[in-house]
Length: 68
Picture (cartoon, rainbow, N blue to C red):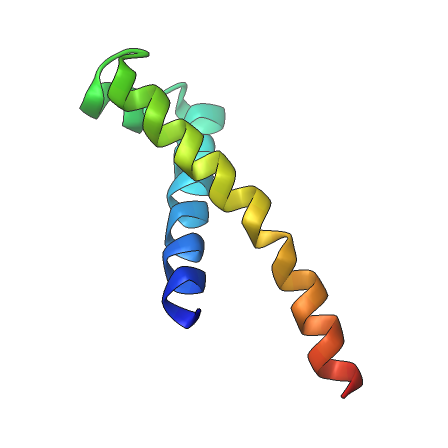
């Protein structure tokens, strides 16, 4: 399970960096590497989005482990 958490955090960081670049410089790194809204780009965005949703579970785990 720890491996999945690490992969999730890496994907969330990639997403955060990409959104930072978009917000600051209007530069979409993922789209520039894999093509503007190609199937691969949309797949990557989808995977990063799912990782972001999964990362919400970290809050519940942290709260449970702090109460124990």
